Length: 396
Image (cartoon, rainbow, N blue to C red; front, top):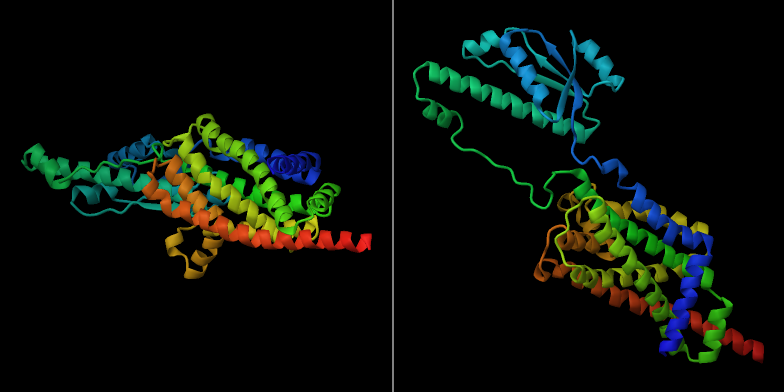
């Protein structure tokens, strides 16, 4: 039995590396994604976004505010311009991403104790840039106003300590847990890597069956066994063994080596990560085997995968919080192994979760593995029965 498993596994491995369509997905694609996908995110935080200033007041206070804005790490005051029409043209040409308008009588209103609003017109089509710059401007403006308020109270004879406490009764300290750089790469890359492993394994397992169906090796193996149940079980298990070994290696590359290579946080032990990923690899492979019984050509595979990739990406919660999705999308998420795998893997590797904290995703994957194995086994048994019956007709 072990010899048969190893022979089937070896035959599947040969097929992976000898078939161009499969090797491009399960080997070449893996390493292309590993190298090129993280490149746009390597500069994790948004820095020195070019914006312009319209200083209609041109006083000491307005110039001081501009200096403080320019000193912020997220902002680079690139231009001083005269009007909003010029700013609009520059934004459309993507030379700047926004403009700060300091109004007339800015200093006079402040000295008289009146409010003087500072406006920011930003390109919100780049939501990450817009939100980052808007937050930076709001922070600088709030600090600027607080300093003026404190100076005014001190000038009125209020004790400096009391003046500070009245304006800022408490100090807030923001601590970025599990993402010390507050970067987008730390957020997106670990989750996206699991999604890449899912899609390459899913597509690859479908392609493997398309190219192995009615192959000389499988026909000879089934005829030699001449037993439907054992043949189906061995064929299915041997192929799963191949994917398991191959994707455990890929998983180590994507979640251990990649974290050190791209300087991403990792808080878990390798054994815990591997223990969690086992049912993910098995359930994804089995789902691919099930789907492979209903597609007949390579083009059918890619026509099926393109829309399913979009659905999986959406329901994982990478592009939009799952809590804000309708119940239908939660139900879809229960079907695809990538969804609990991404959630659980991030909990383990980036957050150092204990078993109780990722057990829901772990058992979810094992349930999917058991369900998909039963379905895949039934379909594989039907395939074996056809081979046996065809062979029997030929002998008669």
